[in-house]
Image (cartoon, rainbow, N blue to C red; front, side):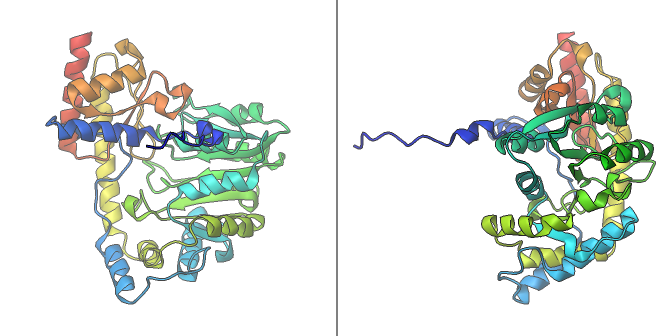
Length: 394
């Protein structure tokens, strides 16, 4: 038997975080394997099928032999379709030459930070926010600067909040609207004021807008449409949420001209290209009928009312109505439990999987993330189980 010890792992791994949703999913699946019933309200995944015409487009592409390498930035047809969609929905001209395609939206977070930030640079990011933001900032050696999203502001922020965080070392500002995990939406008037602030500061912007089609009672507004900021912004979109294509791993973005070649070089070093058959499915999604998407969005609107009303009826819980995405972010401070304690009690004692707000940053303490990407029946059952648990510990 060998007595040689294993070589040490890279110290940089200590700076790389994870996404708690997948950890809780694994725990929930383990409990299910032991015979426990589990209602899943923790994962950010639409419980709808990918539209049929999108699936057929991929199947046809595979049958037609679209199974080989393709251009690293993306096939022309999808870059053009993405540029057309972004131009039409954001109201600004987008050049297809600036649209890049990746397997999922996350590569733009990872490579966008690597391409723009050096060790010691500061990156402003939303907190509570998607945990991969802070993870990659730290891994790249940059300094994460949290922008607090407060319940009082509808889980958005004020332009002056961002301005107060800007320093000469600020290299990148990450914004997310509609937001994960809070469902907050940045109003147009805030974007207009913030754009004037950012126009006078020499930094890059990454605007994560993958939930752009999920806005309730209003229209989506992008920071990139103001003050010419599109010329130094990564405007990030994807297929996972809008088209229920999480497993397809498809993302795209309009990027500043100076970043097209560096990002493409990073793609080549990492994944070479995105599967061409899936890209052709993306073309079908963007250009084909949206009937199934509209049906899904109407159902999410109904579930939003159900989950918010149900949460507000629970002891020790209050919940503002989310303006976008498919998440509620209830305040649970009245229960007397921390976010992590309630997450674990719900999982182990009630058979309900939700996420602690602290999975999304330090300012998430006192909150839970509830994904209503599940049926109305399961949402109602989960709320009833949560009520029984809270009453038992009151």
